[in-house]
Each structure stands twice: as structure tokens, then as C-alpha cells.
Image (tube, rainbow, N blue to C red; front, side, top):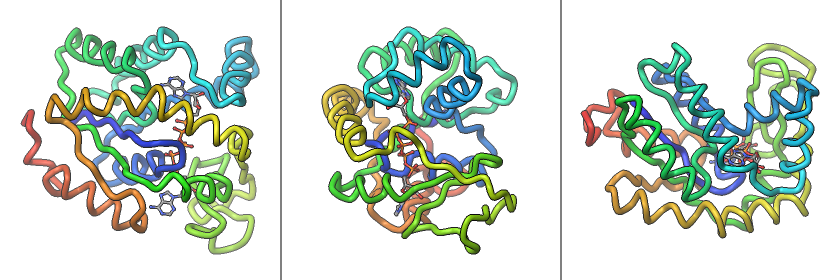
Amino acid sequence: MILVLLGPPGAGKGTQARRLTERRGLPQLSTGDMLRAEIAGGGAFGKQAAAVMDSGRLMPDEIMTGIISNRIDVADCADGFILDGFPRTSAQAGTLDDLLAGKGLVLDAVLLLDVDEEALVERISGRFTCRNCGEGYHDRFKPTAEEGRCDKCGSLDLERRPDDSAETVRERLRVYRSQTAPILPYYEAKGLLRRVDGMAEIGEVARQIDVALGGESGSLFPNG
Ligand code: AP5
């Protein structure tokens, strides 16, 4: 099963991708996380990525498609995967089709998290993540049980993203509208687009995703 999660910054793509990973055992391929790992590594590519991400703009298409092509070849993707943050441009969507076709794979569904953009700034500015296990939290919507400690692994190493400042979030939203939203009709025309109410409570969004995928088993997928 191969899924794409689409939606503007803060729509909940990462949150729902992690839930899908837990429920369906598919790896989450987050291009944002991959780039942040490169930044943490401190190499030349990481420095280039940090400059682009901190500005709210997108990395070049050919770099991102190369990263995804290599990642899809890793053994844990053999039974499918969830793309979180890719594709983000028309060029990336076209290349993904070519990549999958070249590997004999088929995209099953594209899940669009529909959200009110005004709510996104609050969502993004309130979020933080466990640096140890990657679990995501939010000051208001998903606080930790004990302040400053990850519920999942107990780590005290919680962090906020540098590109979550109000100014950068505005630029990320502008980039989403101009470069990513135009790929929605492409997937709609292919009959792959499933719209989900991303404004609902996190568990309800997950439930709607299951319904959109034809239940827990995903047996109603158009591609079997
Ligand atoms: P990336 O890391 O992909 O960021 P993004 O798309 O801007 O999305 P976010 O991670 O900010 O949000 P999300 O939708 O995952 O929401 P989340 O689940 O965290 O990309 C970062 C940068 O990398 C890009 O700007 C670009 O520079 C570069 N990049 C990445 N991919 C690229 C590509 N393919 N091409 C070129 N450049 C690329 O949720 C947000 C918060 O809300 C959390 O705190 C969560 O707990 C909370 N929340 C989630 N759902 C709900 C809900 N239903 N109700 C209430 N709260 C909720």
C-alpha cells in the first residue's frame, strides 16, 4: 500500500503518518524529517538545507526526487510506505509517477487534510517534538502528561523547529498555495484524491482516514 499525505504546513501530515505507521506497519517517509536529519549531521548539504528551510522555501526538485528514489529502495518499503511531505510540486508529482512505474509500483491513494489556514499558525507555533523518539506534541492540543517529559520514551529532550516562526510559517503557507496546491487537480483527475477534515480532533481525523481508505484492512483500494 502506497499513500501520499498532502496538506499545508501544520495540517497534521506528520501526526497522521505516524498513526498510520502504528496501525498499518508502513514506514513514514517524511522528507522534512530527512532534511532535518541532514541538518543535525552538520555537513555541507545540511547547511544548504537549513538555509532553504529556514526561509520557508522549497528544496530543488531534483534533490528531493533523488532522496525519495533512494529511500523507496530500502527493504522496509517492500510492502508499501507513506509519503509525508512529498510530492510538493507538479514536477515532483510527475517524477513520483515515473519512479513508481519504473519500480513496478502503484500509488493507492492521496489523502488531503483539509484545514482552515488561520488555525494553522496556532497549531504550528504550539508544537514541539521529542528529539529522542520523534513523538509530536502541542502546547494546547496534545500536551505531555508531565511537563517537559516525553510520554512515550520519558526523554527530557523536547525541541521546537526553527522554521516555525510566524514569519516563516506565512512564507511556507504562501509556497503551499502557489506550488503544492496546484497538484491537487492532478490527483483528483486520476481518482486518487481523498479529502479528510483536518480540523477535526486528531483521533477523528485518523478515523476518517481509515474510512477513506476503505476500513482498517484498506480492502477497498482502487488498485487492490
Ligand atoms: P515539512 O517538515 O514537511 O513541513 P510542512 O509540510 O510545512 O509540514 P509540518 O511538518 O509543519 O506540518 P504537518 O502537516 O506534518 O503537521 P503536524 O502533524 O506536525 O517540511 C519542512 C521544509 O522542508 C519545507 O518548508 C521545505 O523547505 C523542505 N521540504 C520538505 N519536503 C520537501 C519537498 N518534497 N520538496 C522541497 N522541499 C521540501 O501537526 C502540527 C501540530 O498540530 C502538531 O503540534 C500536532 O500535534 C497538531 N495537530 C495535528 N493534527 C491536529 C488536529 N487534528 N487537531 C489539533 N491539533 C493537531
